[in-house]
Structures are given as structure tokens and as C-alpha cells.
Length: 163
Image (cartoon, rainbow, N blue to C red; front, side, top):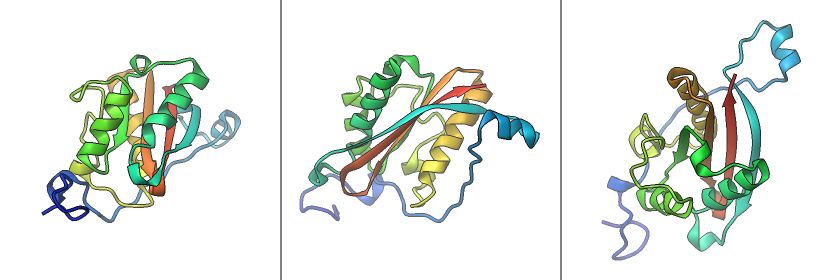
């Protein structure tokens, strides 16, 4: 059954599970990384947030990503890895389509997204950014976009570059 609306299409089968999890990132200046003998995996190119009406909660990653790309002078095709926290399959598809990306773009969630891996509230953002950075390293690629919705119609996006 559809838990949110009678006759709706969002079900437990196409929504991310509510899971427990933990993630940690170290975000530091280049000087601090050198001073502590750290080997950075990626650097942050920029970030952006945006809001949409709460009735279309989940769509926030699209305007946040567009805002970030405009600020950086980049397009979706400039990213080698895209980590999208898809709370619901419909939300992920709507975001991809608004960004001009194919539903099955191989750059998106190459290791699975929140529907497959889970969506531990409070750590999903760190997981997205960490996964994006590591995927750049593993694939020897250059740029990644990590984006997700935040409650009540907000969205956030971050762009990373492999070092």
C-alpha cells in the first residue's frame, strides 16, 4: 500500500529504508592536511542550497545542483560521478530529469543509492560526499556532484574534485 496518499505510487518497495548508520569526514584546509600528514582524496569546489515548496519535498536537489553548477560554470555533463540520495524512486527520477540526465545514467549512484543502501538520517550527506570522493579515486576520475533533499523542501549540493 501507498503510505502517503491513497492511490499514490510511493511504497516501501520504492522508498529508501530508515536505517542506522554512521559516517565521518575530515574537512580541512590544505595547510592543516599537510601539518597533520593527511592525504586528501578530494577538494571541495563549492556548495549550494535551495528550497522548493514543501508539497514537492524531495525535489530540492535539482535547484541546489543547478545553482551550484551556475556558480562554478559547470554543467551536469562535467561530472564523472553523481551521488544522488534518492529518498524515493520518483523523487530521484524527477531530479535526474530536471538536470537533463537519463534515468539510467551510469554516473549516478554507481554503487547503489539510498533505496539499495539505506538512508540513515543525519549521516546520509556525509556518506554521499565520502562515497563520491572515494569513487573519484577508484575510477581515476576528476569531478563529482553529491546532492540530496533536506526536510520540508530544501536541497543541498556539493561539487568535489579529485586531488
